[in-house]
Length: 149
Image (cartoon, rainbow, N blue to C red):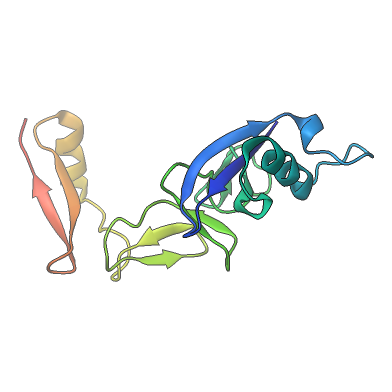
């Protein structure tokens, strides 16, 4: 079974449909994206070029079953299709964040959030605190937060 994302004119994912294998295969039984696109155009009144195949098993450019990742992420409603890089991206979380093509994800302009200390992690595990980092768009920094239970 193949999954296809329906893309708007501004490359936003509007929906995701699955198509039976037989409707994506050529006469030799080989799955071909353009065959599925033509089928979807015929049955959904939406241009073939705006149906993009997506992989249910791909997240952050990793294949869940150890296979080859396909198009960065499984498309979801509201995701954005990056035609140039052939990647589906989640909606951009903050205006300052940039695409990380390697991981098919967004990252802050200063990199990943800091790691909690051993003490903070053990307090989280014990349930006495809830340490974490949240992005502050105004200061362009990761803010350490703590809410006791």
